[in-house]
Length: 204
Ligand SMILES: [Zn+2]
Image 1 (cartoon, rainbow, N blue to C red):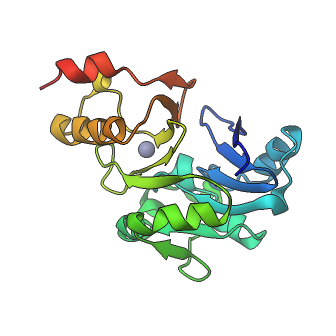
Image 2 (image 1 turned 30 degrees about the vertical axis):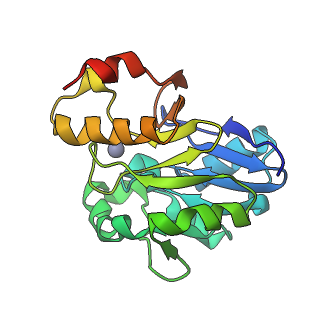
């Protein structure tokens, strides 16, 4: 399979990552509510044809990561949902205001799978990797882990910044990613960075 490329089409302090295997592409995190115009412009600026997005995947259902999911579905980008995320989808609306122009995410057209099915689905679009359940920032958080060590972690809290979260849950998620070969983090906010394994080893 061809090597994948990673491009950030983010805006408003949030990263939206396009993982491409040739002209077969996956969008990880899906824009703020009502921001489809901005998403289109950003994709265009980065030379990503909208019609080549095979799926949209939200790392978790917070408005900065999944707010435009339905808008993307309406222009032909199917929503890839993990079974651990289904319950969180209707709850997201609570964090929106009328002026956000949030469009409710419906269940129809969604492709809902278990994490154990993710490898074969990704392979079908030319991407080698898996989707891993990584709770900690929220119960519905997942990470996309590529076989080359790149991992898209959404808002999984860096160990040094754990506050309100349950530290055990957060650390367990990082350890799981490390065990499965994660080396380079592509977070939901801020620049990509190497996985700090020394810090994880010293945590108990
Ligand atoms: Zn979040």
